[in-house]
Image: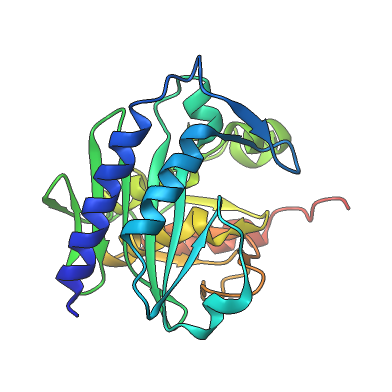
Length: 262
């Protein structure tokens, strides 16, 4: 099986997911809430069902935000890690940052992935061996190696909770609430870095991590360690994503921040 075959499967699944999502109206979709008040809609579940039918083969595992998880996936070298609708709140609020996110993991590494924003029509697709594309055109991470003047992506909650960290700095901040879309924008060279100290679910990061790797960037956990996938439980201790060149500057900046109060 070639990487081109993997990417073709991802592309087909992304477009199918977008097709399903466009059938739902945020004003009329049924919404329930999971623990932590995280919303889930009929749209999330419909895409989850379709992608689970399309992607995993007999020798491949499956992990999705909207599927029941189990240790059976740990026995597989290749695992599909999916967020059927990353940015459900944005979908419900008509904010054009919601996406379908798909990552393929081999032996704990995100090797191929895709992120599709149906609102903007952007299809990000990538793998380390093939590079990363946006709507079929090759893209690369930015070349900025300094935080001065850099564009840092963050979500609205982080800006509210930690304003001193993200305002009146040498870098600029742009609000993008959906994590997968933020990582795709870094891969495409449209932003330089992002970080989050809170634990991150694998389905939020697997697709974006593959895109950034394919585009020449770097993704680590918040402490600077390698980001590994198909873990139990499927969460990483925070995240730092960048174009690679500015990564040491970001790590230096984060080390100098006051420790959060417990």
